[in-house]
Amino acid sequence: MSDEANPFESLQSQIDDAAAHLDVGDDVIERLKHPERVLETNLTIERDDGDLERFKAFRSQFNGDRGPYKGGIRYHPGVSRDEVKALSGWMTYKTAIVDIPLGGGKGGIIVDPDDYSESELERLTRSFAKELRPMVGEDRDVPAPDVNTGQREMNWIKDTYETLENTSEPGVVTGKALDSGGSEGRVDATGRSTVIAAREAFDYLDKDLEGATVAVQGYGNAGWIAARLIDEMGATVVAASDSSGGIYNPDGFDPVAAKDHKNETGSVVGFEGGEEEITNDDVLTLDVDLLIPAALENAIDADLAEAVEADVISEAANGPLTPAADEVLEDKDVFVIPDILANAGGVTVSYFEWVQNRQRFYWSEQRVNEELEGIIVDAFDALVESYEEHDLENPRTAAYVVAVQRVADAFEEAGSWP
Ligand code: GLU
Image 1: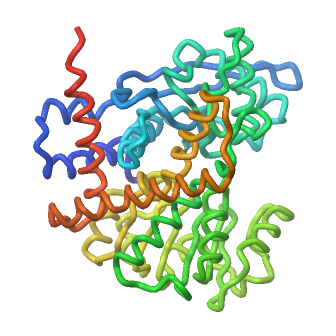
Image 2 (image 1 turned 90 degrees about the vertical axis):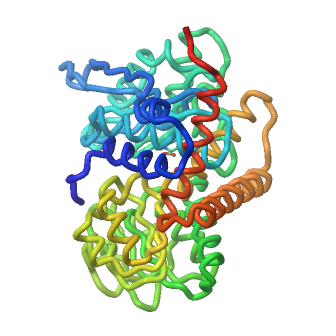
Image 3 (image 1 turned 135 degrees about the vertical axis):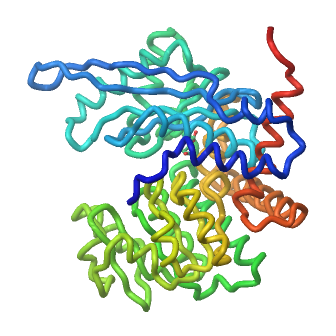
């Protein structure tokens, strides 16, 4: 992974690329390139051995013109103020391209959760929830899972908030377990939209998904579900990787068995269905029809992009390509389905969860998946319309043209206060 690109600067350059095709004033664009506010806080918890430890944490509320701030909370040693700001901006344009009535936010704690016990992580999460309490709420800001967080952390956040507020408000956070007010289909949602978007792109490009070869970088929740679902659609998953390395089998392998192996051993490496052990960079540069980067930001920089041989990329991760990599891939005619659309299934089903929480009426998994399908297909159609209308070279810019216009309209219609 390269760390050459600052993700916040990447976000701003993506907005600038779109602004060049929009009739929106520079003053408004300038506003839409910065978060409204960022909380920076120091959490202190007691370790199991009785010592105290301090952790830095952030929550960025980027834009709330289209609805409550919405976005996950990640636990990772690489979390930084600029990373959280970028991710909150990407959430803003993600909720806009899929046209759900939410804004954008993101949070993070600088921590490697592998180094802490479950009870330490519970104290840390509850401590962050206490700090967040004044700024979150189902009509204010609604956190969700992100890298290294999941249902367990969301249940703790909900419980802390409800206890302190003396209320029942499950919609304060999404991505909860079903028994705590979660939604059917939420766990699969990010991987599901990644493959729905890929299917639409193949259709648009007149390419056959049946038998297409697929490489998946990152085998966490987004990556492995995408692998399972694309396999069910008739494509052949030939490579996968995680932080320990990668596996490759030109004839394909069973993505579910690879996941079982990872559950047992901690990695896909060593899985008997993978003939060859390869590196993470090898997975990204294989000659495949579809590449799914599903790990962290900046996985592909300009140098690596020169070696990419995939025809289509569907970004399950947030920000996996640096802007310089984007330019290289544009010159090579690689069709990149941008993160704000490809992985928007997560926040879309979070939206459904929030709606269900507010109505106290729960949907079947079939209904969730059907509604998700409709939203992602509509967003892809909006991308294609903008791509053709503005004669764009890059699908990411096409998506941002639509999304920035929607946020700008809401901002301008609201007027200024005071
Ligand atoms: N963390 C996910 C994302 O980056 C989901 C956010 C949400 O559900 O609010 O889109």
